[in-house]
Length: 64
Image 1: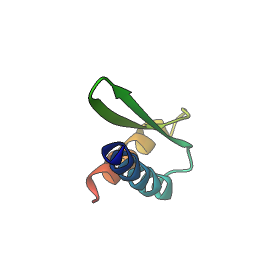
Image 2: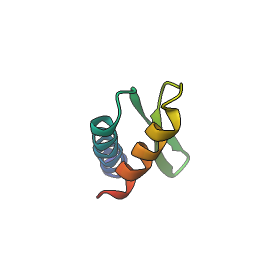
Image 3: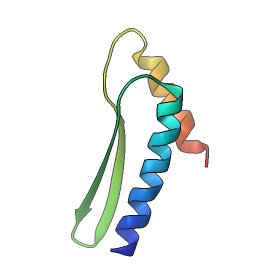
Image 4: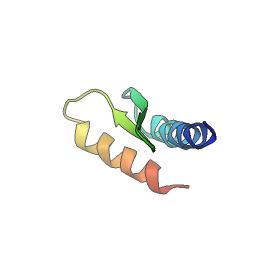
């Protein structure tokens, strides 16, 4: 349970940085398979600005 909470907290921090860089909705999904826990941080939305928003999300991941 502690590992899952730590991963979820880290994913939410990443999502918060991404939200500061884009107007698109950012979704956090935490999942568990057997003995592994992981998280996805996903930009929702599309359009002409999609590529720039993807780069903004990428920058947010490295900014810890």
